[in-house]
Length: 310
Image 1 (cartoon, rainbow, N blue to C red):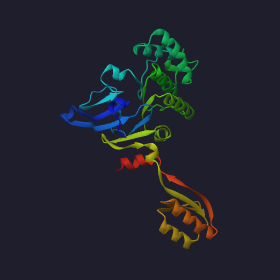
Image 2 (image 1 turned 90 degrees about the horizontal axis):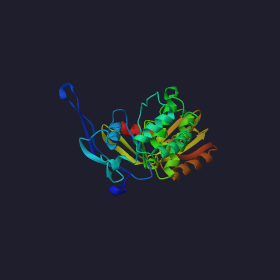
Image 3 (image 1 turned 30 degrees about the vertical axis):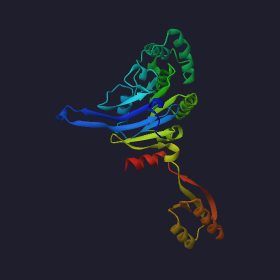
């Protein structure tokens, strides 16, 4: 869906980034005409294989890297303007905080850099440490934090100034399963409060569970875009049964889109529910054991692999 530019949380317009190498002065087109929109209050996933141009695209949105052509805006403001950067909270991948700071000291420094006054910082820092599960660790030096704890305090840093847009690059990298569930819960509450969340990640299961819209970039171009529920929607109906006679198996195999054997059972995939129900009637007529009938859906990982492999 296309919306008015001023109504977008993020709008990317024909972004191009060309790097020139020193060796033979060769040009590398890292991003090649990427365009997409992110609606306010949604959770958006930017996906792609290594070297696809994801991080370069994010850096151009943040105005850390200047585009060769095209542009980006944040809540209607050019991303190169201060007004386009102030609403953003950012957690980069492989961030490096000075390890001699305590958790609270680091947050105080970054809060000051973002323009927060000292009273607001004193109020927000304990709240955020508690929110990310680090209450009691504020006075401990970052050098003693685990990788997962550093991710948590990095998320607190990104949330300090209560941003309208949260940009997260691999937000659960190094976090244990319990921590991932915790962080996902935090992000879900933020989305309910109207915060727009932009995730750049390789963890497709996390993206599928959490993101509403995704864009897949490949070779610097947009290869696929859409809502997760549409991209992973039903591709038919799977019917599982045991003790299917060979004659009936051959008959159903001719009608089904595919058949797979599994531990003494057969899984038939039918394009429509009507065809699946007709197969159920035939199986029952032969007194076969019906194990299950359910919609068969694609995973986001399957969609991703299919898109990248062309």
